[in-house]
Every structure is written in C-alpha cells, then in structure tokens.
Image (tube, rainbow, N blue to C red; front, side, top):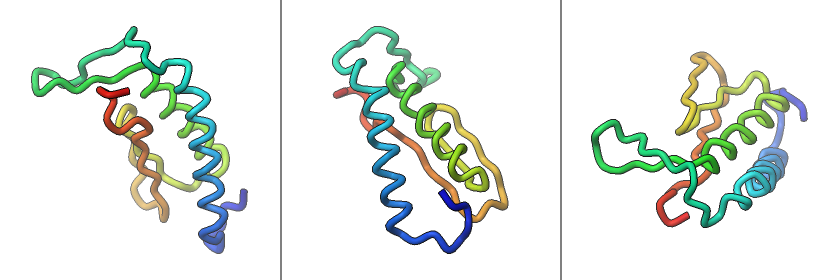
Length: 100
C-alpha cells in the first residue's frame, strides 16, 4: 500500500475490508467461548474484555502498522497515541463484547 496522502477512498475501503477479514479469522475461534473473560472496569460497571478482543486488535494494529507506518492507531484494549500524525485509526474490534 502506498503511504502517500493521495490514496483514494476506495483503497482505504478495500484495506478496511481486509482488516475485517483478518480480525474475523482471529475472533471466530473464540465465538461463544467464555474462557479468559476479564473485567477491566476497575470497580465501575462491568466491562468485559476477552482474548478475542485483544487478538482482533493486535491483528488489526499489526496490519495497519505494516501498511501505513505513518498513521496513528488507537485501540480500546491497547491505547496508543502518536500526536502530529495526519491519519488516525480508531480500533474497537468487538463493540459490545457481552453478547459475543
């Protein structure tokens, strides 16, 4: 993938579809498997995080960083911030973990 600012919407959309496919492959083996669920609420309302959440975010981050090293990636599970970058990906691969 090109890292220049001239990249069109279609290229980003195709890349996002690839991210969805990669994260699906990481997540589907965990579907309806409640092992490894942790509460990350630190005393507040129950806020579950699973191995699937973490794996999906790691897969997505790795692919973005490999293809768009000049983009910032911020995720629900692993945070991150690189101020001053022109582009930022916000990652929450399984929004609504409880029903998952």
